[in-house]
Length: 172
Image (tube, rainbow, N blue to C red; front, side, top):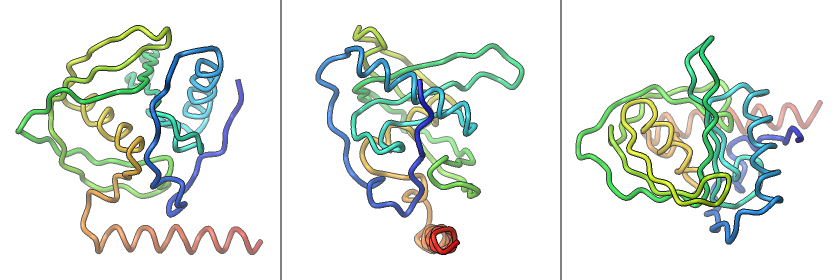
């Protein structure tokens, strides 16, 4: 396992659409382990492969309650089969948009088909916070950040501040 650097917006690699994982093998399982290690160290509740510069349709999550048991969750090639018409609003943040949060409205229920760590096809019906997290991480696979789902004014302000911070860090 290895910690991988997390890309930070406005890095253009975060806008790329990821390709499907053709087969689940030891290389993919090693990537899954790296993603979990990187996510827990950050710390975060979810991380998609594109956030570490690997453009494959793969994500990991662990939305265990604080002081609760860990619930690691892997999705390979996830696809939303159904989404509710009703929406829920949650304050979202992102390891690729550090320090910034915004309310985002998303369908409050989704049904998703995916492959697990062993390559077996699975389905999950999710609602509430889990549904929001799944959609947030799946957005990364299509080159979409949560800031793309907020007003242009707020998005541009956040991205300008992140770009300025990147320039200052590079100058040091």
